[in-house]
Length: 129
Image (cartoon, rainbow, N blue to C red; front, side):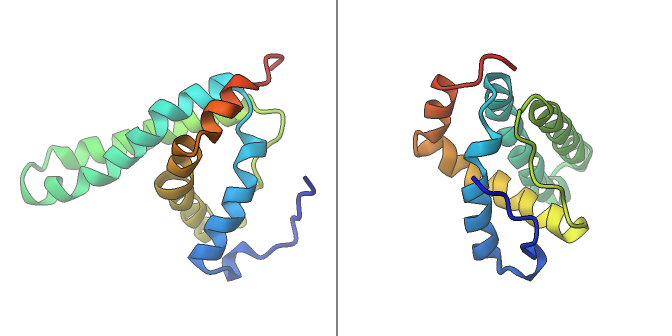
């Protein structure tokens, strides 16, 4: 797949960004270890985000757990992606980072998993890396 680095992702609508990220998901998710890391790390990221609301209203200790979950998730995913033969596109700045992060964590990972593409990638995984 030709990788177009000239696309201005900051100019894309969020739905356009999700579509772009969906096209880019399979090529950067081929390594078996990375795929397994994502099974744990993405739900951890989601849980970290979801802990903010009860943390505000019910238990302030959850506000400490929330960023910890997110940080551990991101560190694990960075490790997993370092194992891939095809690297993810570099981020174009903070806005691109945040939009792509939330597009992947809340939309495209679950689509990748539930569509069976995660399983297909895992079964065809690159065993050399």
